[in-house]
Image (cartoon, rainbow, N blue to C red; front, side, top):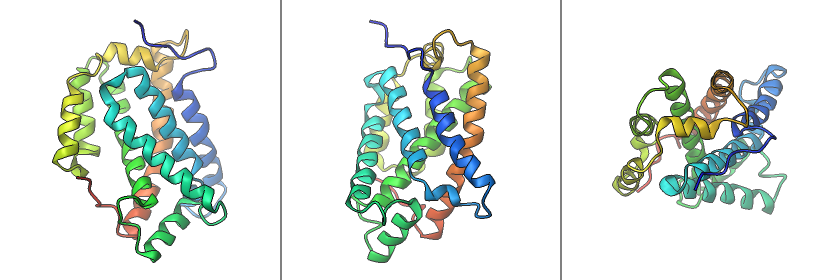
Length: 221
């Protein structure tokens, strides 16, 4: 059975560009280089779009999908308890660090960190595929994983990803899944370049704040 294609409304790539562009516009009019972190919505929205892409690929990346979904739910649940206090990523980090809960397994600080690393992985994979569209998909995924997620995974998580690597679709099928209806490959390349150019500085801001709170090097099991 063919996997469901994206409808006429456009691809996940285009939707992600729209979301992250709002951050870029706000940053351009503010002196604070980290103003983007006052808005949690773009990070969560981009992560939801990654889930949609993973759903298109199928069950092979179920571990990553489940991690992203659970972390999104954790942040949203905390936000609902007090939207005023938890309306920003920075305030969430600050509050949990002050309470001594930021390093605990169920903290939103760790959820933010792992969501950011998941987007790092997606960005790295897209950049590799655009640079070398003929690259073996398994090799592209493994390379992206090794430079973004593998340094922070324990042996259990690493073993799960190693199994998933053997089941990813080929690169042509994956690129086809990324395209909106009637979209050309050249247009897709331009959109990926736009998206990654917007995402990289946003992700760097989040990592900088994680470092400032001593949370950047937290690992999983």
